[in-house]
Amino acid sequence: MRTVFASSRLLRTSSPLWQLRRNAASLASMQEVMKLQEKKRSSVVFPVRDLEKLLSPDIDRTNFGLFDPTMEEITEAERWFRPSGKHVIDYFTSAVRIDHTPELQQPEVCFIGRSNVGKSSLIKSLFALVPGIEVRVSKTPGHTKKMNFFKVGKAFTLVDMPGYGYKAPEDFGEMVEAYIQERRSLKRTFLLVDGSIGIQKADLIAVEMCEELGIPYVIIMTKIDRSRPAVLVTQFMQIQDFIKSQTLGCFPEPFLVSSLHFSGIHLLRCFIAHVTGNHPKVS
Image (cartoon, rainbow, N blue to C red; front, top):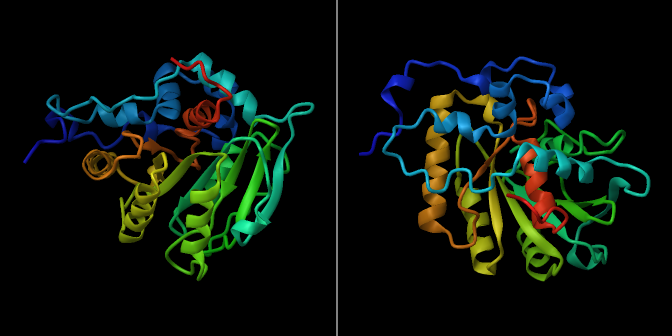
């Protein structure tokens, strides 16, 4: 059995990410994040770096920091998530069947995940710089029943898919699979997994669907603020090992996000801008 934790770290009960106690809403923009002390700034933008510090030296770090833009590049990417002039960001339309989806030419990304995984909260955080945008967040699992389309100017479209699992629409599989398979403008699918509990059986079905369809997808670990560092790093390593051994089309490193503290949100914005071709020059 390999040792995951560095022994000198086991006595630690917190790290900069979990020590961060600041008005979370103020961290929605990189302008405010850049005002933080360097360690706190790094924790917000690159939460995986805090986890990496907890690992024993013999752990393979080959797939750590695969997407590693500079702070300047992340700040530059933020402009696509900030409305200005003709760059209008807003809810566009909803659809319950593939033949009801809008015919759009711009690149798309979609978000799928179990009911109550924090999908709507994540999308709301991504669009936190957009005054008045309507992203419904409910405490009731299975609230999202339709495919909700959000246009980000002429740059790209973000699609919020219905949650699977508890109270999922009866035709969920048919709806989502048809969209993912037929949507030619789809550049990346983001599969959300609860960071506090890891991959569940329902998630495995979603992974299998993505693999069978041969599409590029990314796993995002949500709610990282709800887990102790020791639990989170264990889940992270298990998911990374799963990606390496069980998948072909998945990005090798999961993204970590906290919609509450905006941890990982700025990096994810930059990645979305990158895969949609709006921010191609990333280190």
